Image 1 (cartoon, rainbow, N blue to C red):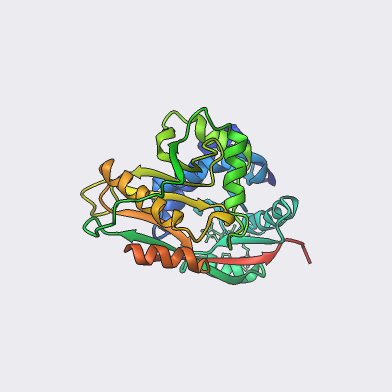
Image 2 (tube, helix red, strand yellow; image 1 turned 90 degrees about the horizontal axis):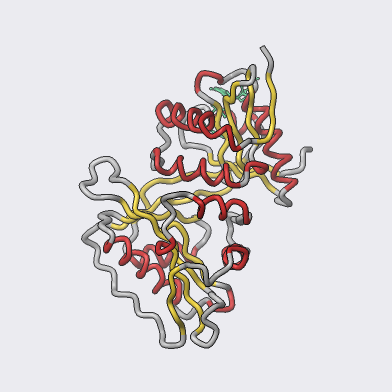
Length: 301
Ligand SMILES: CC(C)(COP(=O)(O)OP(=O)(O)OC[C@H]1O[C@@H](n2cnc3c(N)ncnc32)[C@H](O)[C@@H]1OP(=O)(O)O)[C@@H](O)C(=O)NCCC(=O)NCCS
């Protein structure tokens, strides 16, 4: 039997999905469904160099993605050191990406609770998965006359969009960033709909966006009669904050999702991001599932 680690390759897609499907069934992470994992797999395949996979006799049996905060070993391949080797690879990837820490999601129950401290990880903070009930009224968005609202299209080159996303999230507590290849990959999907990305620009510089909201309608979740809407991203450049743009874009995202047939609407937020959390709470979103994140310095000691 041989064990190994190597970077993810695009042709690993079925193998990656196999690991995710098996773990979804066995670990049943709260608040995650097949749709979420598919999106996560897509994000990893968009920037495969940022992900390492574990091999057992050439069979891909686990992966680590510092960007997604996910380290998972196929349930049938656990307790053979794959997790430990992936953790080492994750530290190297995080250091290579210039991050000073490796941050991983550790479910509240399951093997991760023993694995994380064994690797020297410590609890850092949690993300909240929040839901807005279908009956909660949300005011109609009202953006000021000084800005224009446009959906994404050829008018905005992809590198400019990536620069905008990264600039809006530069001070984010979770340290989120995107690579051009990852966004290219996401936009190349057959089901990518540019009208799900709304951008706001100053009226006198309409090609120079300063804020955005991205939404997506997913399948109904357990017990839901209607599809569940997802506010994937809301961002405002720091120099444009404090003028209500985030609030109005959130309202616009909810209105778009409801117009597309969504019942409940969900989003996730870093608990330490007090401004965003406050905005979501005031809009009527309720914290429902906690996703704890544990961290380790990315430099090996
Ligand atoms: C957590 C997970 C990644 C561990 O993978 P793994 O390949 O089984 O881990 P390893 O065999 O490398 O174990 C490394 C150490 O972690 C600890 N550990 C792992 N699983 C454990 C368990 N079920 N019970 C107690 N300790 C455990 C042990 O200290 C182990 O060292 P040892 O085997 O020398 O005793 C795997 O169970 C998994 O994918 N779980 C679901 C996802 C998850 O929780 N990820 C958390 C990422 S931080």
